Image 1 (cartoon, helix red, strand yellow):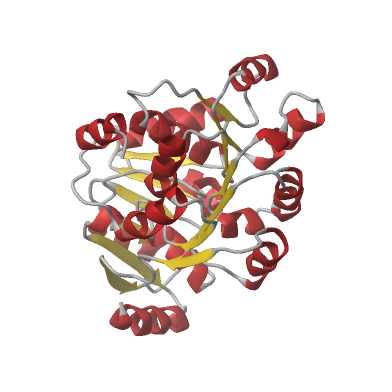
Image 2: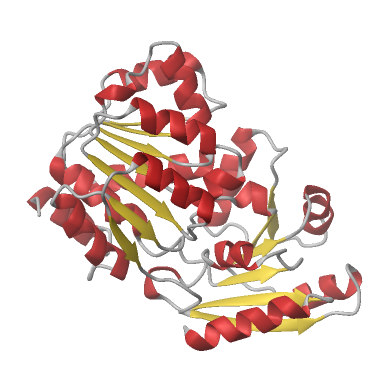
Length: 337
């Protein structure tokens, strides 16, 4: 490995590679395509960032949300801090002129699909120039309606030498994209299931008051609280002085500020919806509380991916009103983890 990368990751606190890193990095360095099933917090960003920086090829990383775009770009810059590598992020909500100037000489572009295709359609970005293409959080891309955009991007980057697709789950729709656009690949499974997380369930009597009381009894520092709707987020955050909110209808500048404030420990709890928190990657989250239970197991896996990161222990508490099926499924899977 490049000495400059080794120095950077040592300073970042890397001691040993995680499972996804040890499985993915050698294959990508050999020039192989990879399809990786790994949860948020498994170290997957470094799993593709290190080979990208080591190989020195022009690279494109596609992410589903603005927040994740910022986080991934920042992480790549950290790993490449001693290298002369230019990283540019591209997402909606930023002035066109700023992004155009950034991508002109960038070695690595981290982008959301919509703004990337917007700049491509204007002739600002030549998609055929990218040699490595990474699709991060692929299942979230599908859920957010970006799958057709991903197909266009993969079609326009047909000259690429290495493709990596990373996803917490790989549903049939993603399998079809892989089959259509990635000719041969190595499939990797790492950090799957619910390992490193202790799962607890609190049975509540009603959909609001007893849940609020349960939250008061289980609140802590470094907690992400998942709520069903943005209106419930706004209502709940007013009841706790040490909480901050994340909603899809907040201006991007406030979203960024709130995430940074929670990350820096200025607030104990971040109260959010699934939509607003997609792709959110915040280290040192000790606990996830499902104030409103998720509607399916896949959403549960995405939510708890915010805790138990990088091999550390985490805790997930779900308030159960009548979602007994979910409790049963989680207990069954966690026993196998």
